[in-house]
Length: 315
Ligand SMILES: Nc1ncnc2c1ncn2[C@@H]1O[C@H](COP(=O)(O)OP(=O)(O)OP(=O)(O)O)[C@@H](O)[C@H]1O
Image 1 (spheres, rainbow, N blue to C red):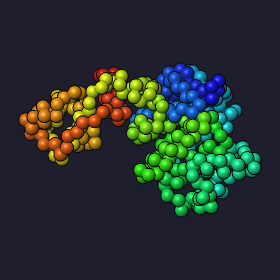
Image 2: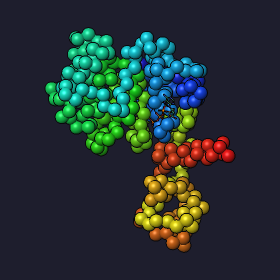
Image 3: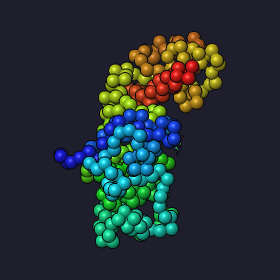
Image 4: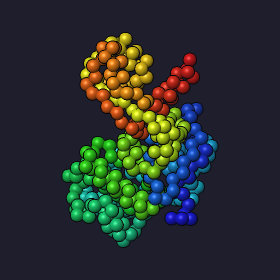
């Protein structure tokens, strides 16, 4: 892959719907064989970025190249897109579905059959080709959804929430398939709300907030730069807090997630010391634990910073 152009090279991309700016000066490069995790809250602009990459939203500024080509609409075979909604024909078998998608991608019948064998080998679907999609589990439907997107061997595979709604075993199987595809040289843009999946799978991740893609980098590097070896203390509650107790927790530096049942604090503090502070505030935790901060901790911090900036901007 040395010498191959980047699977995706986005530079200074801005885009808008009418007067509403949705992407702001986005830089994003994905090398062949690299899995990049695109993270961000609802409405951040992830779908708009995918639409721009696929040539369906015109940039106001900046450039997009897929596998070295700037005119993506003339090179649709360079991109494979597996949408979040399963886009398959339920009454057809896996093979029949894939034959339709192969032909739609512009492959001949012979090329389609070859591609089906090869892609189904990677996704461990060979023994199931005769099964009707409506009889498959959610995890297997998601596998077929991915295979349908790669029959034409795209340089860039875009996966929009590929593991949403599947159980843990199926998720692990899907993660392996994604890794296999990357090892074969595809650049993968993985859009996910599953921050644990992103941490395990992605060489680099980027946070999209209000149309800006920053920060981005390897998960470990981002976490080290933000938290510098500090611990995260998580306090789980089983009680409703009074206004005073909530204020107390916030003054100790805790922030709430999970509808106020889970409180998080970053810092090197002793559990005994904290337990004393909580007791004095009349708070009896169901559980207290330490862990190393993960991408979910970083996501929470970025969201709080973003909300703070947005509130200051509005004031
Ligand atoms: N066709 C459109 N016209 C006008 N505004 C739009 C259009 N599509 C999306 N938007 C707005 O652009 C912003 C970004 O939307 P987008 O769908 O790209 O976000 P997203 O990160 O994909 O969200 P989600 O995770 O909910 O899918 C949102 O505020 C959305 O309301």
